[in-house]
Length: 316
Figure (tube, rainbow, N blue to C red):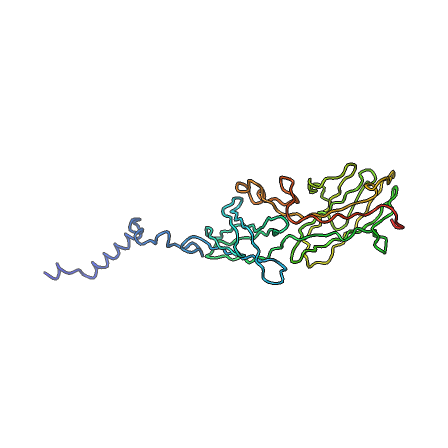
């Protein structure tokens, strides 16, 4: 009798185990005892901290030896700015929220006039523990107009014989003269007499009148034609030649120095920070132009001014 009362049979043990399993499966309070804490959970490839460590390394493009580029970074989650900071000695690391397939947009830029770096925009992968970006950025360069000459004159004369109703060809040559640098999307601004010239065209570029900076306004009686060269001109590139044509009016006269020439200047386009950038999207908060909202030069310095004279030549 004692053995029957004081000991459990094998069947009894099995029933108890099954009861415990059922309690774990169906009673939430019991399940919670065995569940890991939230901090210990891993979502996809994210670490237990729930953060991705992003490392940004930046150097000057085209430099003869490794040279740090000091920049600011701005992290956007869709249209919202979520983090910003800057490099020190060309590097910085920071944390952002990790998640399955989580991505951010990072703008990297230095807006220092004449000495800054053109922007780069990259996608940050925040679906794992780390994400590293090694970037080479182009510092603002210095463009120079070498010449504006008659297309027909084999000697490259800077004069053409303008005349009533004539259409004359010209070639403008320019280059980035600053070592280890770039000059982005140059705007070629050419000023001519508004009554003596009826049209000005160029090939390989796009006319963009609305992009002319207000800080470069025409002299009285003159007007500007503005053209965009669509590429970054590196210091290692050869000089760029752009051909164009000048259409003189049927009543054109050349009575003074302003009437008797076309003068051109070249400016770059860079991004500048809107004062309200923290509350704006990336596209709205950082604007590409050749001047900021105060009509002040941004990016690289403007080129020299070069002229093509409309007289004293054997060639149109």
